[in-house]
Image 1: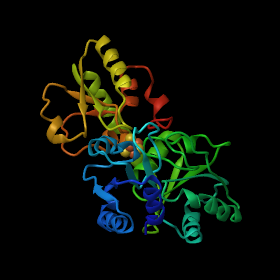
Image 2 (image 1 turned 135 degrees about the vertical axis):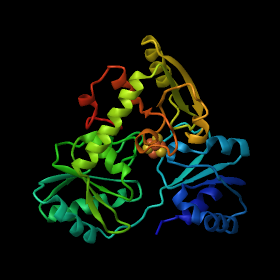
Image 3 (image 1 turned 180 degrees about the vertical axis):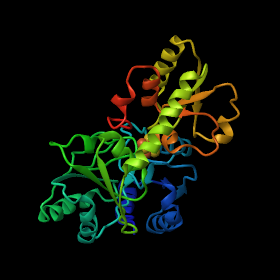
Image 4 (image 1 turned 120 degrees about the vertical axis):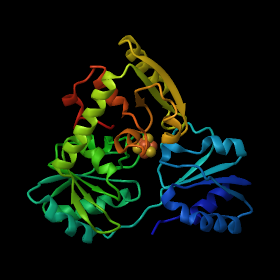
Length: 333
Ligand code: SF4
């Protein structure tokens, strides 16, 4: 179902005269890795090496591996450009997935009854079809708006688990949002960031769901409990990610200093990946604050036995923002 754009990739390899490339794919695309590598090796005299480490997003660019291996080009599948200064040439292949627009619009209509306007969002797999979705909704009398892309989300209507500016920068207020894509996290982030109702149109199974209040309230209770537990902690570990698009040492230092001013013992912990088997061995901290990907704290990491807060939740802990100023108002990005 993915558009692998093998001809574009081949042309780029030839244009650059690349002798060795590193191929990086997110987990969901790894079943295509050998197929892609085989095509490129037959189409060009290039040596293809496949990155076997984690790849959670375009923030997780394998630039360090690419430099270690001395490749001429890093081919990154499944995401759009996120990191401006990678230090090596990067070819992004977004891996679009075409959707049946009229079928999707018909499926969505019962969930947005009474709405006069809607904000359209999706992952990069479907952004090129958002205009078509907007036109189809327009014919049904619903004004559909698509926010301009910028920075980490260069495509119009594109959202990431940590960035929703294409949704928040609409020229006018809307009754709610439609998110087109699989999984729940982007839609959850959209609800937490905008405070509006979000309808999720999953183009892979055709199911349309609405983020309900109960689900959000359950999450709110969990997050408040984590913040309160971290408030009581005397010793806290602040996690800094080594992943190039998640690393935020400056923010981690600021948070650590402010916690130190409140008489907590705080140390920074530098991690490649947040994993229970490694973090649980640090038995001294009673809580963690992570400055990497917000999904780590919100989705949770299985087996970690202490509360983990996002950086924005740390601001609530520090008393810089109230819960009401955060929940539904830029909670994730
Ligand atoms: S949500 Fe997390 S994994 Fe996705 S781009 Fe943002 S930091 Fe990376």
